[in-house]
Length: 167
Image 1 (cartoon, rainbow, N blue to C red):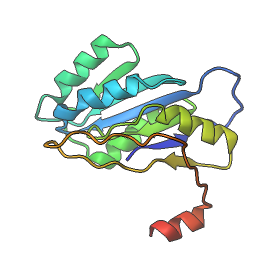
Image 2 (cartoon, rainbow, N blue to C red):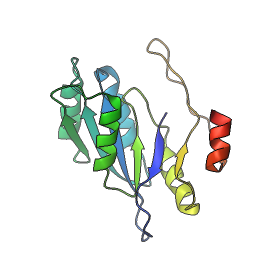
Image 3 (cartoon, rainbow, N blue to C red):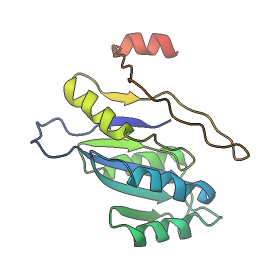
């Protein structure tokens, strides 16, 4: 499940929204290419993708390096020792340099247009701190689920209300 977080609070000009997508990765080389390629196909936003390989023992660092060589919007950081997911997430958020930041695990994928929709919602509602979409679950041995089509339903909750619903 990916979340778009508001990073910058100053008003923006009419340019496209900027989004830093942080992809922490530990031994998910088998998913990494598909995850990042789907991010790079997002429209309506300017992207910067930061893959942080947390000392994987599979081919994650090789896949990350290939993706960075293929697209200048992709940057890679490779840890020499495993720092764990929380420190890795925090490192990526600290380095985010866009109006919005998304934490996207390497075994997750975005639906087409999801970043533009998230940015539009946050631009229209400055009081919103983060957005997320409905998760579509998949496994390696089954075809990927198809995203819903048609109108998108948006619901805005106040913080306490959201916590009460989720916790």
